[in-house]
Length: 74
Image 1: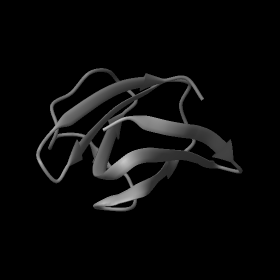
Image 2 (image 1 turned 45 degrees about the horizontal axis):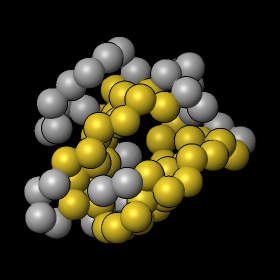
Image 3 (image 1 turned 180 degrees about the vertical axis):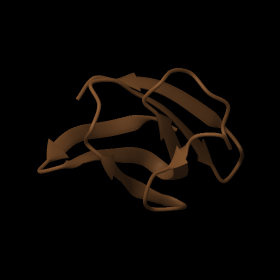
Image 4 (image 1 turned 90 degrees about the horizontal axis):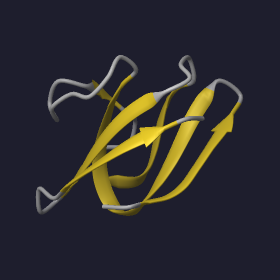
């Protein structure tokens, strides 16, 4: 999965993915999928998280269990 768009609006971080995914994040550093904080939108292209950090470590998994890892500076 690939991030196609990242933006902030109000107090939310928004991600749009290239395909349906489930995403998790951490603001403290790298993590394994399953131990992060779940973003909104399971098995969708659009995901949100509260905007309360300067760095987000994000992992997204598609329906084939392909995993993408990203470091985002909103």
